[in-house]
Length: 373
Image 1 (cartoon, one colour):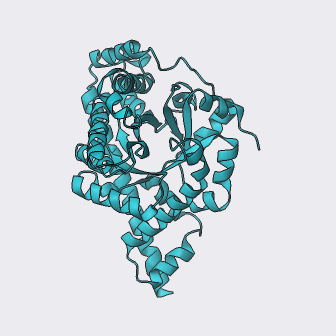
Image 2 (image 1 turned 45 degrees about the horizontal axis):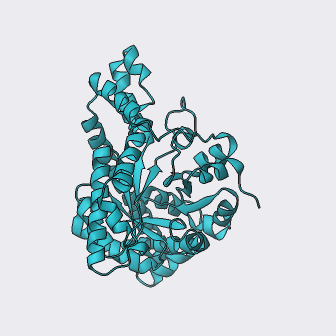
């Protein structure tokens, strides 16, 4: 098997290609292994919506759910067992990548229950529980970047657990996430943990920013507003990368930790599937290329990039001022960007809660049917 040239070029430019999808069929069919061999995939991310979709389709989980029902498992326990089994098996498939990359890639993410998004202690407890259940060094525990999530990030990192911080929309919140990570590393060092074994990525959501801001620009409706459509998400991500460079490449705090083996918290571009059909379908991949980044793509976006994507190596670095000017123009038109990011975070948490509740309902029905059978 040979690697797709376009995805290989993206990888060579410093972007780790991760798949934003997971199912039992993907693992058992060998499709995940094939993606590693042919599409430069070096990681996998999951979320409640992905698990809800996986468990609601086909029969791949029926035998296990029936077995768990016979043991008297409840809904939460069934979901925890099924999802952690999938993640553990995916970690095993990606173990060679993990070894070859010195732990940087070969990562699989699993998210804490989204109903805990505003519960710091509950998030920490479940993060530790999931880490122990999956029991693989290439696991990442996903914690949302809510206000309650920030101290949870610090506490979980302090335990020596690797974290994928999710649902980041604003640069301001991203800076708080980086501080939370560094605070966690400080605490982990004090506790005697090997910092080289602690990894983290910060999942900065992209396409949803354009969706929300474009909607507000359409409502304004002036030529100046229309001209700015489709520019906010990339500008936001570029400002985020500039903030990453400032913290991990310029400021003095991280080098002290680096000397003790610490790793930088890489920026991960999430929500990279294009929502507006008027935009190029690889926009949020082709135009977000920089070293030490991750792009986690839905399968459809990955296939599109493999077919006709392009790699713009000048798409991020050095564009912070230009990106800030875009946001200044958007604000000058009356778009309240603080409210935009507040709405996006609330909607993000709500969508994951809804997906989780759907998963709970569907699993309850399966368990009931198995018990009756």
